[in-house]
Image (cartoon, rainbow over all chains, first blue to last red; front, side):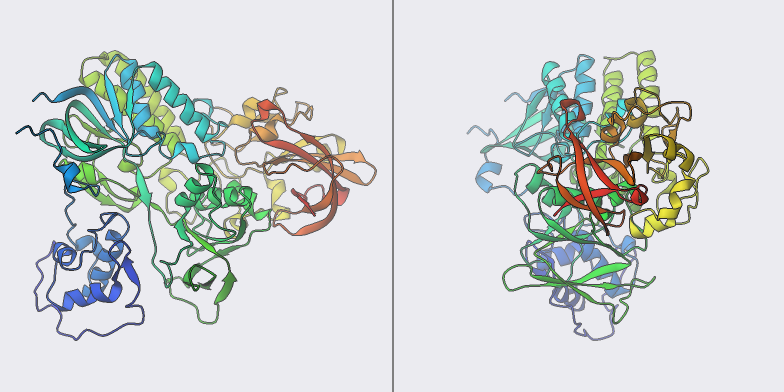
Length: 108
Length: 532
């Protein structure tokens, strides 16, 4: 987060909500409830949640869900989504088979 | 191992990328364009509608024809376009890695143009993962590139230009457009685009959002409901719709990952659609030699993307010594002026997000009814300079131009051989009828209007009957003598009408002029013909 966040930010309990079963990350089939719950399980940054749940790590690499995930996290923490740090894009920006990724002209 | 070097690597063969490539190549530069798709042209080839703007913006030319022209030009100039080539990363010293076939190739560039465009935004709702929920752009690709109808009964979520234009194309493809909804209280896109759909009887539900979609294996029903100013659902306003397709046209977001990987400075700007690389006026990012142009640098439209591409191409040519400073200044001034024109008017940059506009730039009232309902109320027409006075209408055949927002667009002016239509040098001006010119009834204005907003009205066709000529872009074309009904601007049936003429020549470019005979009292309200 851009602002330092305490891991004990949440003193309240996780409360189930009616739309917790709504799928947010379609590629990895992660639900809104799972994303919200991750915050109560100790995750506090976008990168942590991404690695823990795999949101944004599927076929579309977060092109569809990044904005939605940020909104959910920000809503849960009661902050503006603009204050959340962004997850870093890394090469390769498209899913790629390992045998292709390794086939880049190395001559041994 | 030698690494291949190019003078310019363009990433993305859409309108911005191709324009940049053509501009650089026309100055003598060696250019390669990588595109991950199997066809070039980006969004251009699915744009089957006629573009707006002026002649230099390719006004009244269909998007895919502009695309074909670009590809021809690129080929003639020796631009290498490599398809099925995914750029997977940009690294230091302008090194680019490309996945092509079963291998990765690394290239160096003297200059890179990132023109990767945008992707569709999504809104989640109960049932949104059911088959049948698709982006409006995806529906457009299915219809216009692959010739596949996305569904039969469609709900369009979003009333911006994408929703309105694709909505009309869905109807052209034979789908039933059940409704267009928008959570905002006003229609987001051009009034003329909304009017094209409204007169076909498609209802607009503004201040409505989608609550959910239901179905066993695919979408079968959807629930929409009204929202208040705080976007909260108003209880008791739920409406249940039977349909099989839900198109989401809720905005675009730039695909700027490559710019971020390259280390370009980025900013998350809502008015640009999301995270964009910060660029100067020439499209150069914070990293010298890396440029970003088109939707990736800020969501706009294809016409703007093409000019932005040219600007970047010219800037690269200057930086690399292929264009003199003087020549660059002249070109930049011309391109910048052209781009500026597209950014003016009711939907221009300065007015983005404004909901308080009451008049046009040239002093006419902006119809608030049009913003809410998608069509003009009968009594509003007389305010506008493109609508003839009743005296003149009673005397002779006249064009009636129902274009009443400031849109940068003027092909109607150039189309009329008699000089009946005047817009002037400010191309956002409302088109006005020239009082001293005489209409010959040729209908060229009708087919040249990309907004399909011009009609010919002859109240003296026959005793008690008027003849109304309208633009018609549906198949099959009704034959002369066909009986049907006339619809008014809201799509309501007025009563019986008969087709008395159908004109379609090559120069009309697939827009037919259908003339129908209606009782004379409907001369200023009948605006569509429906076969029964």
